[in-house]
Image 1 (cartoon, rainbow, N blue to C red):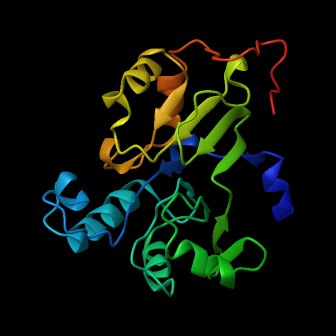
Image 2 (cartoon, rainbow, N blue to C red; image 1 turned 90 degrees about the vertical axis):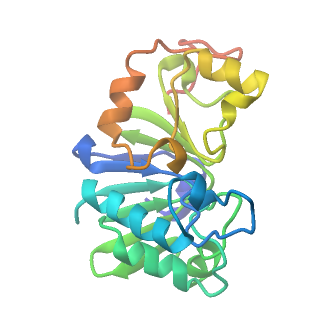
Length: 227
């Protein structure tokens, strides 16, 4: 696939669904002066301790053939991309599809070094930079991967999944967000707060298949683009 096709054509992934991992909002290096910093809310004693814990948790489920999806907000305070490179060099995977998110420190700098949209972090190990909205076929299942949660997305009336990040488990705090979660739509939040260990696509599929397709717009199963 030519990199420009990412803007209109779905990625096609085939493989062991237990070895396809998805995570969002890692926030590596995020150490704000807040009463409860993000690393503390995740059960760690420092930003550095969180980094080590995240790497350990990811690698406990991954191997050198893993396909990973990182749904944005990967690193903070990374003006040269060094933190980004160090993080991904220590994670196990073969291909990592990487969205920017709304905090793209490190992402932007390493993307500038990439050939088209691919950065080879080591031999046989690639970071594939993508837009913040990515459509994919994963073992013939239509999936929308987005940094942000979406009320309406392509193929939802025909059973496509939406996997997002950004909200850090807070989506249900609003009336609209709570209604969205309780609607039964095929939506999964992959933020670290809800997933200390990255969920596999096999685990996500098991949850999604319990839900019938729900559509929030004028499309139905006869009119929606199935990708």
